[in-house]
Length: 259
Length: 259
Image 1: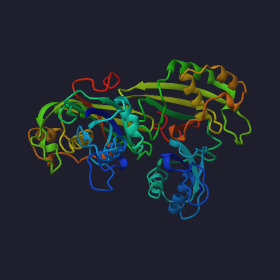
Image 2: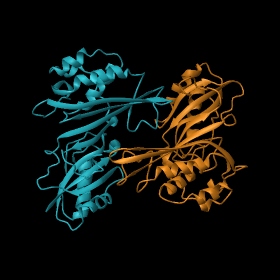
Image 3: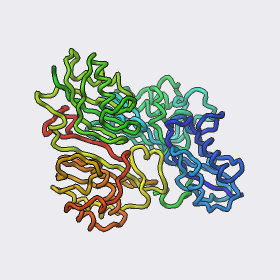
Image 4: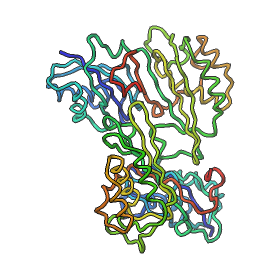
């Protein structure tokens, strides 16, 4: 048996999230496990770096699997893709070092939340970003983003029902970017941290949007001192969220990955 | 009766193009005319600046209609949107000057063709851009793009069955841009001209891609001297094409439009 690491991308629009569920649910794990069974001829468990919710996308999800196969590691991607629907693609497959664990080994993750402002919804933007009415004050958002940096108790940024042991997390970067176009302004909030609570990025994005719309940062500051969920704005929709990268502290997929 | 101009965007993925067709076909014109009938209570013809093919998208299509209505011009957008599927949105509605004709008045149009190179297809890019294998030589593409500028007989850039009276068109700008990301490189070919033949942008994009992959520009030069379609590469898929802007020489939709 050898362990292989997979770099996986998906358009989550019509997927029920990462984690395998009951029959009939189309999940990333379930569809990858179905494909792996076809390729290896035996049931094969797929482990992911973490779950993503229904509707959330990924460009850089990382998974691992164990298999006994004559297929060269770098060809596993194309073999698995042959049995996957087009909305999921294994971008790169490599043999992982002994003891590699894509869940426990993950040191940092980067998510991007995408939104836009315009006169009304724009169909070509709607699939992967979220329409927000009215312009946003980006300088306010950038200032608020700095408050989030470092280690905090993020319990206020967590949907009810989370099973995480601790709600302390460290954020290494929170970058708010905007780009004006003739018909709309695109915004992205890119967050890198050592881990994320359930719905944390979507709640964080919602609060930054509220601040961009004029809300004072007092609630955010209280929330960061272990305050309650009710201090913060609404949870933003899943479709604006994309898992961009999982960092293991070593280049896992060759130079192209860690550019 | 007053004439109104509409700025229309659509995700063409599941649309059968702009032009109204038989029952059961979902077209931009057909869906807009259905919505207009609901809003005005009478059958209302929608005229577009030009047709777009099945699967082609738009951010800046312009249409006009004539109606007798008490609804203020700027509210027509939201009223029409109430009867449109989410993949079509009227971004802005205005009262158009007397004699405005969105087809004949169009002085320039801008289309964008989007593609990307990566290790394999990336699901989050697949809806609005086209996967091309291997890196492209952008400097070659930019040089070739300059050959296209100005007035030429573009008959070689036209699918069979075109009914255009003349195949002479003027291109004012052909901009090839690329942007490298960790997992892929995105490319856009943005073309502004006084008009386009059937499939012209998709054929032109296909030839620029072929040149980016190493094809000599001799065929392109022959094609520009009234040569035949067979000199050029394949027609690129519809989903990479977006109608970005129609220019009437005057600001039609207020300052925001012509930024």
